[in-house]
Image (cartoon, rainbow, N blue to C red; front, side, top):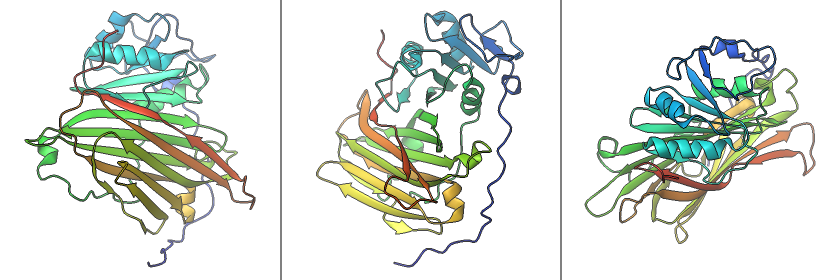
Amino acid sequence: MASPVVTPVSTTRSSAPPPVRLADLDPLYVADGVSLPDGAEPLTVGDPTGGRLALFPATDPDRDEALAALRGATPVAVVGRDAQATLAALCAEDGRAYGLAGESWEPTTRVAAVVPYGEVLATHVFEGVGVPGGLPDALDRILNPPHAACEVDPELPGYPNGFDDRGRALGTAYVHGRNEAGRFTRRDALRIAPGPDRTRVVLSMRGTIQDRGGVDSSGDRYDADRIRLVASFDDPLHSTAPPTGETDGLTVRREEDGSDDAVDHRFESTSDRTRRGFTACQRSLLTPTGTPDPFSYVANARFGWRDARLLREDDHWHHHTPGQAVWYPDGGPQS
C-alpha cells in the first residue's frame, strides 16, 4: 500500500470566530418559560410561525403552538431538562417521517430541535450544552448545520440502479456536542426503497471532529485524532464503504462481520490539516425482506482527540454517542 501523500500546510491555528449572539439569529419566537442568556435582547415575534426559530420550554410546552410552527415550516427548539423526550413527542404528533440517533434520552439533555423539510423532519440533539449560556451556539448549529465534505468518498458497491429515484429519504438525525478537547457532530441519514423481493435501505453515517482551535482562542492542546463509526443491524448487511485504504490526510481501516451484520470503520488523521478537524463517512446497504416501521440499528460514533505534547497512554480524550437509532417512515408512536 502506498504511503500517504501529505500536503504541506501552515501549522498556525486560526483565531476563533466571535461567539454567536441571539441577536445574530433573530427574529425568534420565544414562548413563556424559556430562559435566555443574561443581557440577550433578540428581536422576537408574537406568532410561532413568524420567526427563524420557535423556542419552547421542555416542561409543559404549548403543543398546539409548537405543531403550528412545524406545519408552518418553522424550526422548533426545545429548551430545558428532558428536552429530547419532549422533542420525540412533538415529532410523533407531527406525523412526518423522522429519526433519532439515540432512542433513549438523558434527562440532562437541555437542547433538542426539529427542522421540517417538506415531507420529513430533521432532528438535533445537543450533548454537553448548558442553558441558557450555550443556547446561542446551539441555535446557530440548528440553523446552520455543518456541511463539511467527507475526507474519503464512501462509494457503495452494489448500489441499486435507480435507487436515488425510487428511494425515499426519511430525514436526518444529528448529535452535536463539545467538551474540553473539541467539538463534534454525528449525522445519520436514511433512505429506503421497497423492491419486488427485498427492500433496500441505505444508511449514511457521518462524523465531524474539530479541535478547540476552531472553537475558542485557548485551544492549542488537543488535536483531532480519530473517528470510529460502528453499527450493527438486525437485517442483512449487503455492502459497506469505504474500504480500508489511505488518503492524503487519513488512514482508514474497515472491519466487517458478515455473520453478525456489523461494520466498524476507523479513521485516523495523518496530516496537519486533518489534525485540525475532518469529516469521516460510512455508508451501508441493507436488504430486509419487508419495509420495517420502525427501522432501528445500534450505532456509535466515537470521537478521539490527542494531546500531541504527551506520549503517555492517557493522552487521549474520547467522546461516544452510543445507542439504538430508530426511524419512523410513517411518523412515530402517539403518546
